[in-house]
Length: 220
Image 1: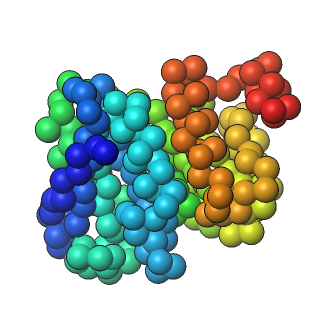
Image 2: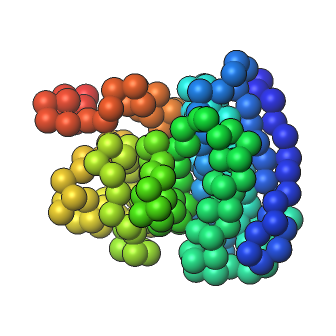
């Protein structure tokens, strides 16, 4: 098992509760994972968020997660994404200080994809873009998702009734970015979590799906 370490960090509305998970060897990068909606039971221990953490640890990344405002021991109250993005930016700055030479990736699930898309937009505008994004159950039409880089890895469930696939396709179509659709998967990827890990690991070194690769993946 990987080593985990709990921490607290000062956020915009008080102390934030978090955990860092370490790979067995020297890390090759840093990843931040954002959890689903706090008002609907979302925490940093959500199964999809934990799957993303384990995926990045297996890729050799040191991974940081926080509970958003009002969740667990994190202080404050839900701020509809704005304060949560501010807090994720503080986590980004903190981890960047700890690992100044390492690239930093962003990953999120559901509401967490909105937060990470907004953070990625801020970082790019500041000339310090994230290495890459992984968005699972992207919150298209639920919140105003920012435009995302072309190499973003997107994974969505065919039977997601919380964020319908058609809404994600409508959001992605103008950006011409593909999405991995998991047949039979619901919003929380019950009994389908392994697909998330396998696709991210496969695509992380492959630079994303384009052209014929997209057609091949769809056929599978």
